[in-house]
Each structure stands twice: as structure tokens, then as C-alpha cells.
Length: 215
Image 1 (cartoon, rainbow, N blue to C red):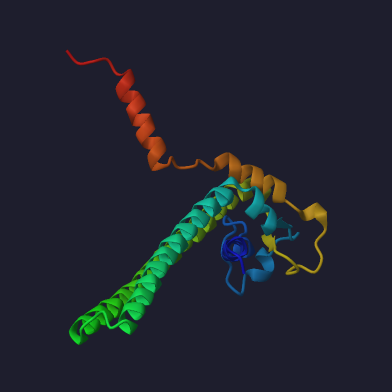
Image 2: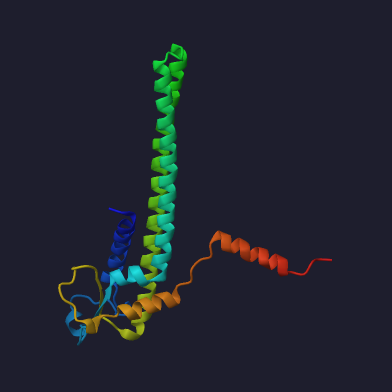
């Protein structure tokens, strides 16, 4: 599975879990005795295409790029250290066969190589955990952004149930109930991308240059 599909699957799961449980939050809770009397006269349902959110919601596109870049950096770092360790091990074996080391020297180098291998495993685990934390952060932010938008959106729309359509999880859905375009437009309008550290630094430098010199 390539990285693009990996990110997509994680984010689709996050969106689906949100949309399936999204409904009119203003509807009061009912006890079993009053449920029949308070049930809505008409059930108003809509659905949202998850794949479209993943490809058209700017937040998803931005964060997918961030995760892909972070994942690639992790792979590059681990691969470089792995190559260095393999080269060192190969050199050690070559010189060992040439009797270039005393017994004590060989044991010391071998112990050093074993420690480097152990350190690489620790680094691999740490970077993997950091990547998973970043991915969870993204999924949580994605879920929250959709929940908050749907809560506002549904104050006027009054849908009883908003479903997510991902792949074949809905066997049939009339396009008349498709609110995907409205949801994506609303999400993108509300989305305010955070400035990167580089952009923040550039903005601060421009402000300093524009500020009048102190006497």
C-alpha cells in the first residue's frame, strides 16, 4: 500500500465516524415514554461523499502534503542511517578477514555496531510514534472541523440524519439527498490555514523593516 492510500484510509475513517453520527444537535433527548409523541413527523436525511471531502477540502489536501513530507523525511533519515550501518558492518567484516584487528579491537567494533543497530531500532520506533501522533492530530482536527461545521449548518437545514457515503457502504442513495457540494464549500470557506514557521518569520521581518527607526 502506498503512502497516499495509507493517509487516505486513515482520514476516510475519521470522516466516516463523524458524518455517521452527525445530526441535529438541537433535537431534545426523549425518554422511552415520550418517544412516540415527540418523534419527528418527517425524517429528513442527507449524505456526504467522503472521497470528495478528501480531495476537495483544502484542509485535507494541506495536511496530506504535510504528512507525506514528514513521512518521506522519516524514511530518508532511517534509510541513510541504515546504509551507513551496513557499510560500516561490511568494512568491519572485510578487515576482519584480513586480520586487521586484534581480538580486543574486533570485539570493541562489533559491540559498537550492535549498539548502533539498537539505537537505529529505537530511533525507528520514536519517529514512527511521532508520525502516528501527527496523524492522530490530523484526524482529530479533521473530525472536529466537520462536526463544528455540521452543527452550524444543520441549525437551518434541520436534518434528522446526515450519513457518510464512502465506497459501497450505502447500497443506494438518491442524488437529491447529496449535500456534498454545500458541505465542502462551507468547510473551505471556514478553513483558515495556519501560517508556517517560515511564513511567520518572513512576516515578522517585513514588519521590522517597515517600522520606523527608533531615535
